[in-house]
View 1 (cartoon, rainbow over the protein chains, first blue to last red):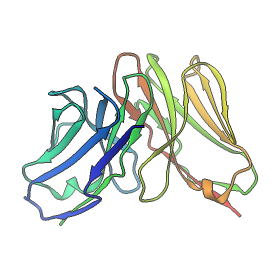
View 2 (view 1 turned 90 degrees about the vertical axis):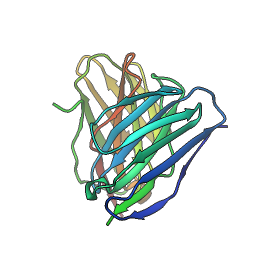
View 3 (view 1 turned 60 degrees about the vertical axis):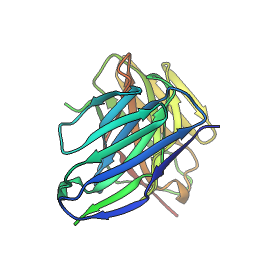
Length: 112
Length: 111
């Protein structure tokens, strides 16, 4: 069966520090991968998605970047965090562009 | 105009009653529709997927899709306090690859 791992679960980082969040999927090949952010009490904002290694589509211009160095690995990064980067970051995967997506456990990021 | 819209609620329903959650979408090219449940502080979990017009039932949950009117709904029968959560509607457009979410509806089931 397929599983998705996302870490860390919580993170407190100072303003201006770098960020690296990692997500890996097991039990499937060539998944679609997604990074979402959810501000407190809000819906899910799609940040990036990827349909293959090295293929990244950015949805929202911002302080973040994403990379997919391996088929089942998706990384969210920032060189310098802003206070506004605080939120709940969720990684998700789907088999293709048609069927449902499944989420990791999320990372709660607080920038102080 | 947001691509997927939901009433943010909160929606309060007595235990044992039917909870009705609604969602509209703007992209007529949307082909796939999903309902997720999200408990406070947790990640969303999939409840239902629906791809064709009509009703789809799974236990106490029924999803309804009307592509002509561009709306999707979720009915929860015999509502339980454990159903209290935020319900997220999502849609995928043909060939778009990405999954777009509504803002979510907060549902509270009162014992």
